[in-house]
Picture 1 (cartoon, rainbow, N blue to C red):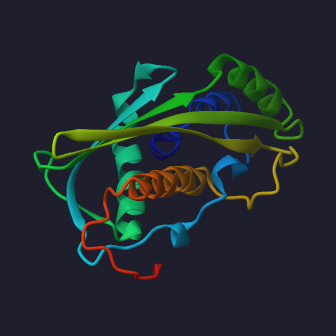
Picture 2 (picture 1 turned 135 degrees about the horizontal axis):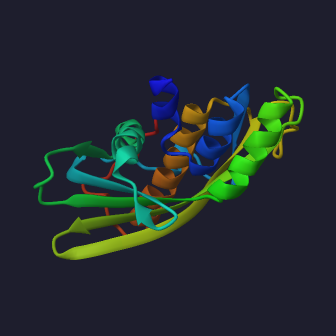
Picture 3 (picture 1 turned 180 degrees about the horizontal axis):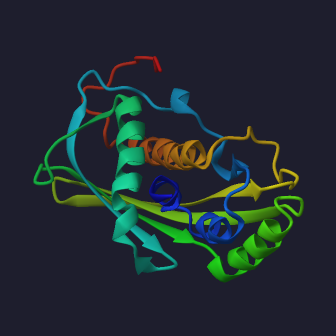
Length: 206
């Protein structure tokens, strides 16, 4: 049971429905709102940029530090995949400060969980975990800050998918949400000539 709770920490609505349905069967789908860009839109510099990383997780606007580690892990994986930055200690000269706010109607999710649990999954539920992801890059006394809205949709029990996206586990879907935001931020930063030092045309090799 402890492992199940650890997995669902970044997902407020999913956690709510799982607590009362037992998570009979779940499939998560990444919202298509940020699927217009892939790693091919990012140019890899000849030399990576060393940055410190700070990640804070919120739930409905309130700090939820229990999910900090999970969220940080997702950002670290995405940034490593980018080939643009190398993570250093928190006191590095350049920094990425990231906050992610999980916006979820947990009360509604728990009501759905009751119905799903009582029917042993026959009455499926669909819940949405929305995210406001804010990324700030601080370098040489200047700061670029951007916010991105994203979401994942999760079906529990016998419920129809709500998007045409590929079904994933909740953890895989959360990682994709973070990756989408990182791709858009790096693209926006490079459009402003940030994170482009010693740029050369190197295609992404992920």
